[in-house]
Length: 157
Image (cartoon, rainbow, N blue to C red; front, top):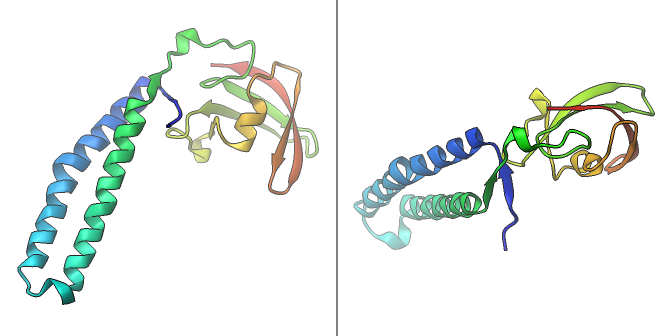
């Protein structure tokens, strides 16, 4: 069973557009590639045909994954987010207690995560560790390089 995927409305629309492109552009292109490879002779020794069939299989798997994700999406509305504790869509300012370095992250779904712009996944080790914490509380996060302690300094939208 798939997990519920929490996304913003904009992300849902992007996912729908990507699925539509896969179905209307990429799928027909894969079919054409198979047809072209089939015309080149004996299918038993046709590497181009095998590659086109494999690409089509991967494409169909991506389409199924998108369809599953879309079926399990729940739209989050920023107006209904409680900023008294860290939750999905909140922006949280934290301080690493070992290095005294402060950073700000927005907690988002897996589909929206992008560390370069300060968006971390709710399922990442830091995201999981921060969920439910209030201002002033310390989150202990188990990372590949050991235990890291973060203090929650501020929570906003």
